[in-house]
Amino acid sequence: MSGMTHVVAKGIQQVEGGRVELLTFKMNSDQVFAINVFKIQEIIRIPNISKVPNQHEHVVGVAFYRNKSIPIINLSHAVGFAPLEISDNNVVIVTECNISILGLVVHSVDRIVKKPISEVRKPPKGVAGSRLVTAVTDLNDKMLGILEVENILTQASLSNHNNAIELDSDAMEMAKGMDVLVIDGSLADINKRSTLEALGLNVIEARNGVEALRILRSVPKLMQSLLMVITDDQMPDMDGYRFVREIRDDADLKGLYVMLWPSISCLPNEDQLQRVGFDSYLTKFDVNAVACKVEESTRAYFGLPMGESQAA
Image (cartoon, rainbow, N blue to C red; front, side):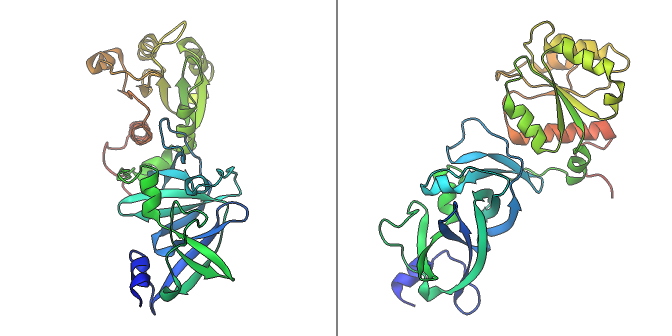
């Protein structure tokens, strides 16, 4: 192997016989690229994606994959092309690099090819997708760009992204299909709805405490499927604090799990929240924290021990 081939091949996992195994895929309708198969965990359909504020422009949001939240990247945009207009017909390549897992949205996947490592070379200047292409090879008389997952992580400022949070799969499976009542004065926070729906929950919305109480008291059967209530603090007619006091004074509703999630980030007084009657609270948008609160409320609803897996 020549010195140049050795440099290019560094970091590219090889299969037996000095060959590299690559998954080819279409970035959009016609541009074909490849990724090392050894970096791929799975190829999945487009999941429910929750938008997250203040993320890198290439990150379209996060999704829940095998009880973890992972960032989802529009790979076409990351490479330097126009962003892919994501639809249900596209797929996500779930990749792993070091301790980080991320999803790459692509138009479609093609096939797996094995190429001799001697045919993998340094990309020429100006190659399409040169931002992330670290090597090239030939396929069907055309040059095939090979992307490096580490570069994708670094470019999207995700190299230190922590995906270590593990959710209890039993509890999260039990939560799917259950109802969550979200009380928000503006009904404009799509992050709340999209994140909860990504967890498989059915979201019911109310504009204030008065409307929420009317829903709870007029639809008794809702109590059979209502996992938790999430409320804003500042709302017209009835704010979150008065609402939770009304809940705790109602014999039929006092057992509900109620969480405070203000639309405006703040640091509330924890002792005061407990005295008023809140079960928990969030101070800012954090997908992992939301998922943990859903798991906690599921354990409370089904009477499962906190912090332990459900017995089989």
